[in-house]
Length: 238
Image (cartoon, rainbow, N blue to C red):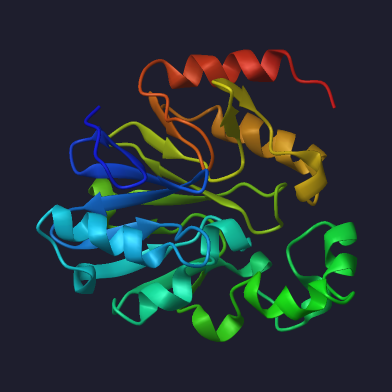
């Protein structure tokens, strides 16, 4: 993997880059058009755009932004990026609500966001329905990487999705799994809505034929990733 000098960035396979900013990963697919998977925290846009420019490309070439879920560390940079990129925004419909009492966070966090001073930040922690162009359910296929399949993998949030390229044998799971301390793990219970559902989602994606695995947090696995997920499943107890 090729290393760059903006944040911590690696080229996972040719023309697919992982940009890590404040321990959250953003995936850039640089084909004829540019696709972003997640946008990082609020304030991440300048570094994302700087990396794109170092590749000799322009942020205006971003035509698609796919959000794996509606949390502030994965969707916070969206509004700023949209000022520079004419991208369509994709998000699962289960993570979209105009009702702030139904934000895709665990109940304890939702309650906290209604208590001062945390309530001041509530408008900043999620993407609103008006910011989403394409609501998905799972099963949709987008054009990047020879066909990028949307797989509904709820548990971390109700609308969490994974993205699978059969042609590249590449699976991007957002926070359906983490690679913390170089160990594949379920998402933390305290920031997930349903860990039992998360286990079911992992069992489902484990049936896919992939060799490369990318996470929302942690380094990508570029060899024998499927076998490592199978090993995780065998040891799961919740």
